[in-house]
Length: 150
Image (cartoon, rainbow, N blue to C red; front, side):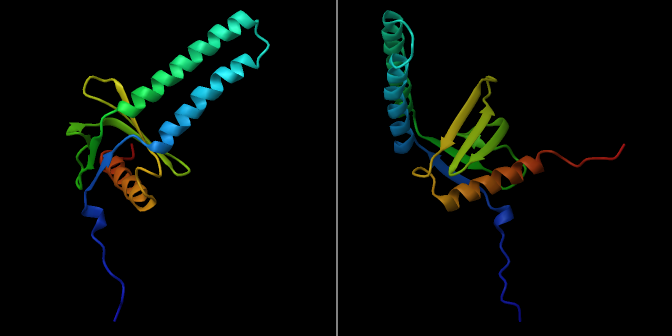
């Protein structure tokens, strides 16, 4: 008698909540601090270096603040051939890239503007990252349709 278990994971849908990562915020804050220092360490004339360093510091602080205030969103990948959704809005032309423990999800919203989410290890544990990766790969291949020799 076989002890293997049949899994129906191919027909299961995936859902998770995305939220800003503490690790991502810390990385933005470190880079926001290092950018002005690198400008000041360059061979630029001091008045230009100081003005660029201030701009870099303000731009980095703005990006970190915008990231921290970003709202949580609900990501759902249906079991069938439907499009993945972010807060109930279909995600068109989605792409998923994996860079070590990070997952980068890119898509176009209903207004054709590019959207993106980054899943850090503190926001999505490794088993859930794998599950999301597999669910989106399943959706990408299901949406391509059959190819025909011509």
